[in-house]
Length: 272
Image 1 (cartoon, rainbow, N blue to C red):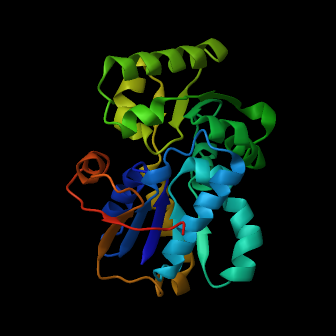
Image 2 (image 1 turned 120 degrees about the horizontal axis):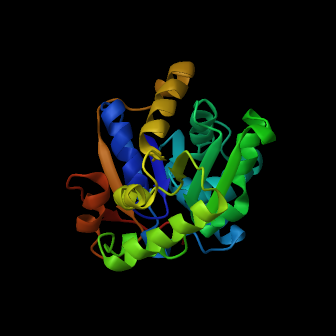
């Protein structure tokens, strides 16, 4: 099976697009809801939590795992790829959401003024800035990043349609436009934010593109598997779908909002 890991519900917006593009691929989703959100955690906490989630998915037989979490991708992915996989899991692979999204942005003809809304941890990591400048000259793009503390918590709590959330989005958009009034495209660099994409769209000037990551990551995954047929051969193709969470709370109804249809979770323990 393909493993999908997220700190909570947000990765379901990525998983939904993977299922649409690759419906026969069997998947195992793990949300670390008991410790969500990750955005205000320390770098070492994020690394340890991500490693525990990854180890669980590998133990369930997943040869390939996607970190469908920008915070985990920014603070844990490279370290895991460089120091953990070669020693403990040499035959396994883990991918993130940052690199495929940056590749998409860099290939856009509207890449001159980019804005990114993300968690504080993702912004602090400078992961998007560093990856983007690997593909584009620094003077060819103006990148403005705005951290959105509190937003993920409101979405996880099911408050995405409240006035509190709408006002918070307006505040973050105002901050973005103060820094760059000519922004052409913005990326919602948290997989929770697609649920409030309409709020960003209402607050931003007309004509500004609002990009979410699900479709981009699903397309890049398909390309990756085409380039690595040996990995595709290791993934089950019978369309089995399993959903796990570290939380003891009843979360299936809330998770359904992220995925778009009814799903049921099994509680698991990944941290001893």
